[in-house]
Image (cartoon, rainbow, N blue to C red; front, side, top):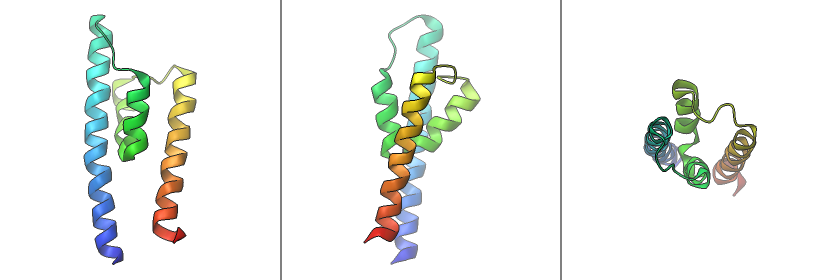
Length: 93
């Protein structure tokens, strides 16, 4: 069971991370052009739904949302919640 669960979780995180990275990139491009932005709650929700590794990578590579302290606090809270849920899923029941 564990190898199957691990493969499934890795796939979910990989897909969600790619999606999250792309959404951050779209938001960064919109910011540069002065166009309508993607709401922060959407970025945070995608991160919460297993996309946070891609969001973290996008923040570093694109230098996007790194200076806004309020966003960073919320981002890391969603990471903590996601990891707590992962821990519960893997070891809690």
